Image (cartoon, rainbow, N blue to C red; front, side):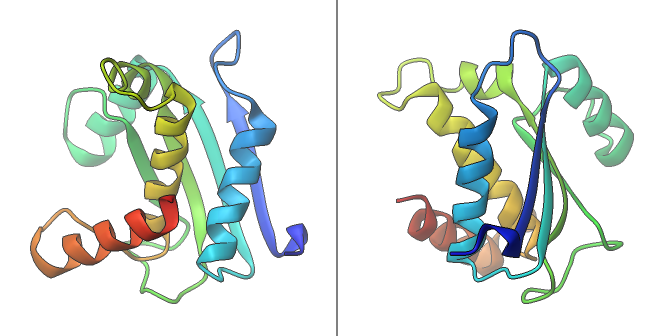
Length: 145
């Protein structure tokens, strides 16, 4: 895998940074490679609950924190198979709170939501349920292993 086939940047707004940026970047690149997403350009930003709640409210009308938001570079939902490009915003506090009582490492939960965001940028969706949601879930499980 040539790393220059997948442009990934990671920005962590929280101090101290809760996760290893290099590991997040490597994980995102690995997910893009598994999707054969040549030419991908993905920006991952790790934020707190207040920041993600603001974006969730402003862009989706939901006035609460969430674990991840994806913003495709193209307007609307990209077609599957289109170039994967855009921003993924992950709330570290929300992801960490979701691991309470799990055997999963907290960092693994953040990795999962980076993958989830990448799939949204690749045109997968679950918001309307049904076959698209099942297809996305199958892809998540196949790639997350």
